[in-house]
Amino acid sequence: FVRNDDRKTLVKLARRAYEREFRKPQLQNDPSLISMDATPGYLFFSSMLPQRILCVVPWVKILIILRNPVDRAYSNYQYVVWRSGGKYKASFEQFLQVDLNALGEAGVLVNDGEAPLTIEQEDAAWNKYLGLAKEGPIGRSLYVIQLRQWCQAIRGVGRDCESQMKVVRTEDIKKDLNGEYRKIQDFLGLEYAPMKSTEPKVVNKYGPMRNDTRAMLEKLFEPYNKRLYYMLGGDWEGYWDP
Image (cartoon, rainbow, N blue to C red):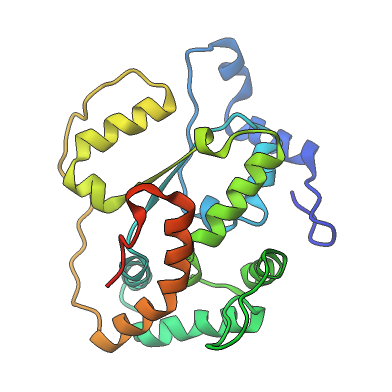
C-alpha cells in the first residue's frame, strides 16, 4: 500500500484491507471491543508499514518488546533451523554473512573511519535493504533505525510518540512478569487482570554461540545500541553493553 517511487500511501486500499482483517462492523457496533495484532514484521518494515497502519488507525498503540540484539540474532537463526525441520544446514556465521552482504550492498553499514550516515541517507539505505533482506538477523536487531522511523511516522500524523509507543525489554519480563504485564495493561488503558499462568509457552534449548562471533556482533551493534540508549533514555544507558 506504499508506492516505491514516491513513498505515497495508497490510503483507500489500505483502509479496505484493514477493515476486512479487523472486522470493522463488529468494532463499530461495540465500543467495548479492542482489536489487537502481533508480528515482528511491523517493527522491521519500518519504512512502509507505519504509514500504512497510521492512515487507518492513527490512534493505535504500539507495544514493542526488545531483547539483547546479539541474542535475538542467534535466536532468529535457531528458529530458521527449527522451521526447516533441520534441513537448513548453513552455520550461524554463514547465516549472518548473507545479511551482512545485503546491509553492505544497501549502504546501511559504514566502515570504521567513515562519516556516519545522515538521517536521509540512512532512510534511503534502509528502504533499499528491505528489498534485499531475507531473514534479516542483523537488520532486525538494528532497533534504533526502526524505532526512529516509527516515531517519525507517528509524529507525522500529529500524534505523540511517547504516549502511543511503549518499549519493553524481555529481560525485565523475565525478572518481573506480572509487574511488566501490569505496566503494559496500563499503557493500553485496560483494567488490570493478573495472568492466569506464568509458565513459559515455548522453551527452546540450543548450544552456545561462538565467542568470536559474539564479539563481532557486539562490536557491530555497539554504535546502534548507543543511539538507542540516547533515544529511550532512563535506565537504558549501557544496558546491553558487554
